[in-house]
Length: 247
Ligand code: HPA
Image (tube, rainbow, N blue to C red; front, side):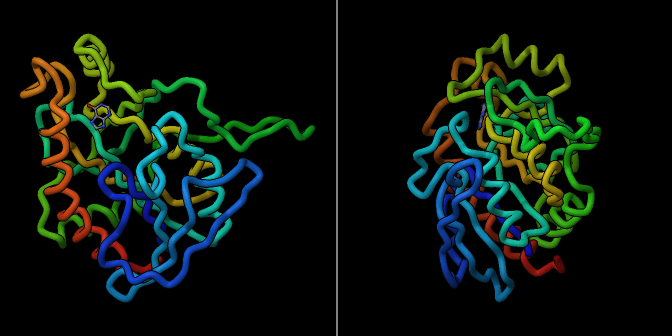
């Protein structure tokens, strides 16, 4: 089954016919909210709002382990994360959709593994290509079918938040090779890998990153709101197509 993790601007999925909601408890505490089981265009999906129903959980306080654990517990096999980003690369202006293929993790202090001391030899998991190829391919097919232009690949720099960055920080991210900046990609992607879920992200640029484009003098919250509203409408169309595929 497909799970959709909705980020900022996607705390609900209009068009989802809701079957039931399930409150989950995990060894890591509670996820961001109840899991919503329903159908999108007649196809079963599970929806989870990353920041909680009323968008009350900031990126650094999301219980990523409980979220991912809950999905795996419910027999989810594939996950698409919808994640807003600031565009660093010139191709990633506001309103652009992208399926990233790399991550740089700048976060600190987040619980980022299910591994614990259990007396067994430590194993280190491959994370060379952090997203699942099959799920990335599904996302790109759905984007194309929805008639969207999108950027096929790119490096997602995940920062701690909740504050936005300075211009110098964005310049550094750019030198590191980051094409976009967001706050929630990690440890979510890694936890999905650890637990065996096929995970990919649709990154939604809602602003130019600090110091770039029309954010040269600062990032306008109003600008983000307007872009979010317009672009999430398009993302819903992509998700409907994504739900139609076989999982
Ligand atoms: N920086 C970090 N995270 C973000 C941004 C940004 O500019 N826009 C949306 N999420």
